Image 1: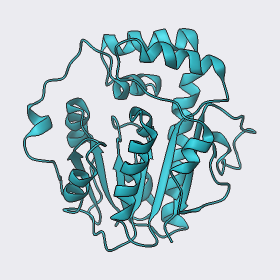
Image 2 (image 1 turned 90 degrees about the vertical axis):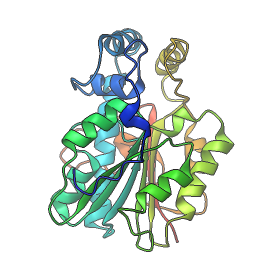
Image 3 (image 1 turned 30 degrees about the vertical axis):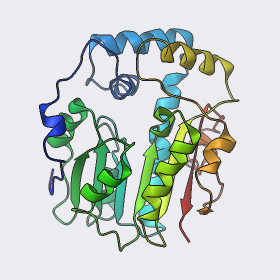
Image 4 (image 1 turned 90 degrees about the horizontal axis):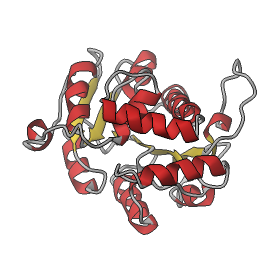
Length: 271
């Protein structure tokens, strides 16, 4: 990984807790990855026993991100990305999608899990023309994120902020909106915000499975209604089709007709 921007101290000296399931590792398990522990597989299997559709949600979320990044690079001309709560590296990471189209793209990933840090350092290699860096920081601390990311990104240039399945870990709506506002306020006109998160009101089986997961001892993940997710984009110009169930957001023409699932997302431009 080039231009590595890791916050001093912190994650390098943290121990990985393998006794408690972790959302990033469970998500990796559902995506078919190998970067997880038995406790994560057990939690993931318990979830899929109740709601097998979570695997579809995980993979649809990844496909949504890929389509977002492709639009941002190929159509909007964005060359800088701040991906907060990136999780474990897997197929079609932000830098891979962006740099395939524009090798000069610069990407900063943010997470605060020591296992994610270790894998990011090993796997997130940049093109020679661009940069890929990792910041060890918590989504709850936007000032720290911005200060560290500024070592790699030029915040006088349009930048895309990616918040994929991370705001669900912020239970309070007002706090979540404050985080989004703080991060977007630092970005210039012409920047973009991409958000996708688990949603309420589509699939009650999914909602029951999520309630059980939140009671399991893992870090809770809070579903929101589509209207609550849409509110994160207040003051921005939503790209058509607005906030939608992620398979319905600009689906690939070659894919089968998509069905809505309990995951909504959107993309918007800062005026």
